Length: 266
Image (cartoon, rainbow, N blue to C red; front, side, top):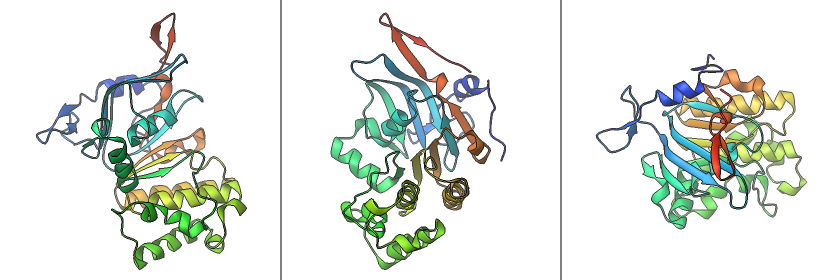
């Protein structure tokens, strides 16, 4: 699949999005489409460090698949956490699927995240006292807004089968390999058919065969439902599978002598 733009075009493409509010008050781009994700004038820094993430304007369209690339420490995971409401920016505004995440309380952000976003964490965040099946079903165990039905359980088993872990469903996750744990995390993220999936290095611990199988399963599931997929990856072999690639060198800044200086490679 050909991406929307190549190296060297990132900064211009971001600036040219020209995001304006639509008549519902949500963010739309110059083509009149309503963005499912919009970050504006976003600033975030870790206390006691020189790291700063600065994003003046970022839009992602419904159904779009986007890969975040860049060196470690450039803010890829941080942005996913900001968009999901796990972290709160120092300033700026984030709209996700029509909800202003930056205006929600901690409890409201947590409920929004569980019910609306499928998350694949870099460290998986599996519960070792639960079986593989119950880890996949976890969003339905912890949110009163989600109702666990036989159909949901059957879908969990189908997803497990699609990534070859059916024979592990009754096993505790502490007895799984890193690659198997990663596949459990991917199944959990897409179980509830979310409109958004945020995946932090979802293939980082997989062997070559399973790498392609898991990513294609994730992309196919999102495209079938027209879900939006944001993925952090260091694997450039995968980039042609995505609609768009964003290099975080364009967002990363360092504060030197008290003055942030933009470091845009592209």
